Each structure stands twice: as structure tokens, then as C-alpha cells.
Length: 205
Image 1 (cartoon, rainbow, N blue to C red):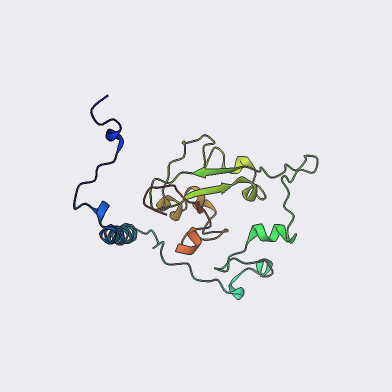
Image 2 (image 1 turned 135 degrees about the horizontal axis):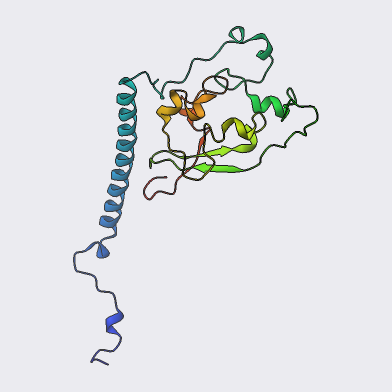
């Protein structure tokens, strides 16, 4: 042991550092918080500008502008009594839950109806600012046979489906139904119906 046993474990603080200045340390912490808020705001603004520029380069609609609300008189008569989403589109799942509709799994009388497939999957989004997508098989298999989507639209294998929102807006993948007979995949609040799984990203809550 040395001449001063135990002294090696005592923390050393440089004179004049924030260890001796509580007010200074608090001030630095507040400045760091402000910089983090500004950084997040800058990232969000950058994402919005990027989408605006890309959408102006083609026929892709601006995702930040919600679709026009459909009026009751504009809907087919058979759909006017259905529950609606906030944009005026029929809420098919709510119609089932309220027993307005009782969808069948098959049109063949002898074949048994398959129960809805109750499994969620997560689409991981390659953008740190955007929440991941939770896809509910149960909601969709109220209406659709697995063969409708697999394998012609989606390959039923993890990581095999790579597409962007621009593909969806152009009527591919989820856009085969959404924006036509299901709710529009646009409008910032409406995006949160699918993008509902928050990422655990350092510095972003």
C-alpha cells in the first residue's frame, strides 16, 4: 500500500469546475435542454420539408394535408347508415363490432368460416422520427382471406416487404385498399392509426 492508503478512491474535482458551482451546473443543464428542443424541432421541420419537396416532384399527394371530409349525400346509399371515421369514410371494423355487418370467411355453404387470425406484426420504419406500424391481422381478416394479400401483395416472411409511404399513396401495398375503400393514409393525425408503436431512440421521446 502507498503512503496514503484509500486516497486513490476519493473523487478529484478540478478547482473552478461545475462541481463547485451549483448555479453554473443548472444553467448548463437548462442550455442543453433548450438545444435538445431546438434540435428536435429542426429534425421535424427537415422531415416536413423533405416530404413537401418529394411530393411536389410527382403526382404523390401531400401527406400533411388531410383528405376532405366526405359528406353523407356523397356516400352510396348502402353505406350511409354505417359508423364513420373522422374523414367520413365507413368504419368497417366498428360496423362489425356493432353487428351491423357479419362478414363470412367463405361464400361456399359447405366450407366452415375461418375465424379471424389474431396476431399483430410490427413493420419497422426506417426513419427515426416516425413511429413503427402495428398491423392487426384480426382487424383485416374480418374481411379478407389470407390468399387476398399473400403472396401477391405481401410476402409472408419477415423482412421480405420493403416499401415506402409513396408506394402506398400510389395505390401499392396497403394502398390497394386504403384511400379507396378504407381510410385515407394521409393527414398527420390519421397517420397515427397505423404508426402507433413508438421507437426507443436516444434523445427523442
